[in-house]
Image (cartoon, rainbow, N blue to C red; front, side, top):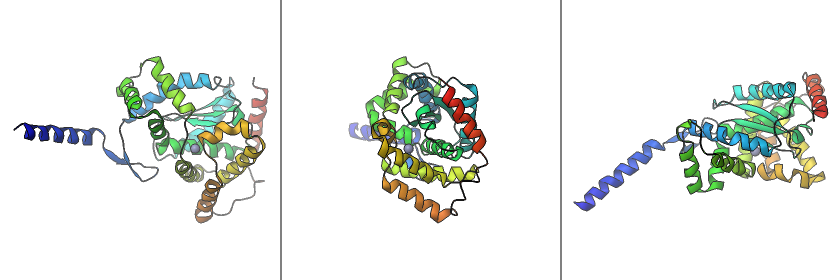
Length: 278
Ligand SMILES: [Zn+2]
């Protein structure tokens, strides 16, 4: 009797696990994912982590026009994302070039990276790549890997239900992990691929993704220590550039002349504003 009862208990647990952590198809990648957290928990993690994360990035750049500009470009990419989330885009003061996406869709670009960009479509490429990480759930999965199962479960428990109000150290744990997050090379190429699709859907020349990677690649050779952090988070390899080129060559026409950039004026104005901010 006892062993039969045990089997029932095991069955009940298996069925319970199946129903609470169901498999689902990710809308951005089309791949099956085992989801161990709810959408609300994912959003709550980002909300809990944001204050500590922003602090580590030197705070937001205190210029409303610049913030609205970054938000407006990001919103175009968010609007075409396969996965609707409360996306938010913030320019932070850190001079270390980097871009980050917290679980739930809070996305950050550093002043240091913005300064290196040459045009608006490259900014769109950065933000599109980050939106893709959120849509594909790369960021929360990488966080889970980096934290390990036990700490991740603790964090989930603390933010459960998405009601917020978890202890400050939970927010700091998430922020610290996200700050040192390393995406896999596979995730990077996938985020470029999805980002290219979003760029095109948002009305930008999708070749700007390769343009961005070329800018970063050149910088990585000239200022490797300053850019170390960016390439640790988002590894840049020759394969990644090759992959992006192939996707573009297969699916999109050759790039049009860079001279026909209708957004050059407003981008240059914003770069000037950034120069005078702080
Ligand atoms: Zn990335």
